[in-house]
Amino acid sequence: MTTPSLEAKAKALNEKLEGLDLAGRLALVAGLEGRAVFTTSLGIEDQVITAGIGTNRLDIEVSTLKTGRLFNETVALIDKTEETYGILIKRYYPEKADIEAYVAQYGMNGFYESVEARHACCGVRKLKPLARALEGASYWITGLRRGQSGNRAATPFAEADAERGLIKINPLADWDIEKIRAHVAAEAIPVNPLHGRGYPSIGCEPCTRAIKPGEPERAGRWWWENDEKRECGLHVAEAASSVIPNASNAA
Image (cartoon, rainbow, N blue to C red):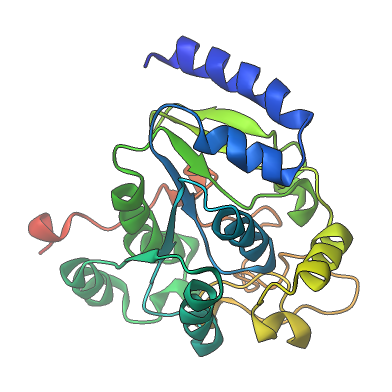
């Protein structure tokens, strides 16, 4: 699909999704022609979406990126979520050769030393596995919300992702954290216990800390960097500009 037609389709879909509730938004995407993939990080927003998919038995593939540096609590929640909703969450892992190449170039925890090294780590542990998860997909469902950060304040319900040749769907774009928490409580949705310990946004363990009172939701992600709009590259392409060479070409 060409970029203009992809953008036109995304715009029309955005308008349709705006007038629906969460169940309606997910059902609409599940009924579209083409493969729909939801990638979950097991955060509270993603658990709401997974519950909607599982409870309504929707034809949406649920996948997660097993980076190798996740919190134990996050890993345990994958199994619990599968058991709760009777679904399969497909795991995508980084390639061993890519990790070895990264360590050789930057060191195991080199991401603390420079933005370049951190982007490279996200590249091999998250972006390359994501590419495999989305291969052949027409729709990519995410848990992005406008209230998560200033960088996400204009998040639409549907947007063209020209780089990946698909449409990104953000069914919780207009939900605030209070609505998320109320829904979780009402539906008894299992969530990561780290949320109750001051972690509103949870990524890899070495790159995530609890936030302080009054800080933005994502302040605990890559906290040692100064850029308030820091991202890993999953949703902001320019954040992943620095990557290590392909393992096959690495020295």
